[in-house]
Image (cartoon, rainbow, N blue to C red; front, side, top):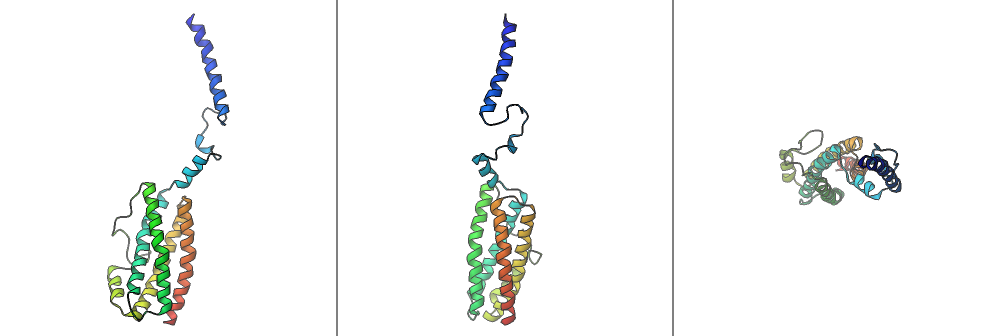
Length: 204
């Protein structure tokens, strides 16, 4: 008498599973259906996708943090001097005000993604990233206001060009919406500042 019971219960359980799957809003006839491609309507899935980051996003943040930090350092060195032209000082203040909050934002991203900042000393100096070397920073610190302004503009143009290159790499390989938005902002705002700095360099 046990075998007929099993025979009846087996199909019944299959029917029940199909009904429950149908009620949950998925195609119950697709037992091997890939759930990750379905939930476009699920807010939870949408939110988790927005919070994800790939290797390009992580690299972008890890490299851009020390890059921004040096731009702030360069601006601080210039703003301590007397005799800096007003328009150059205004630009340095603008650069510092824009990049310091972005550092805080990117540090928050790395923390939420489970990654640490790039260890100090791993960024190149004098390479494609436009970073100043320690000797160049020392020269900037020791220069007078006018000479320091020229040095600042010359090196910050290269620095911005390096940031734009890094941002374009993020656009080419990143997937995090916030990181992509920042990369677009870096490209547009820093290209505008390069144009201003080129004009200031010629006029001072």
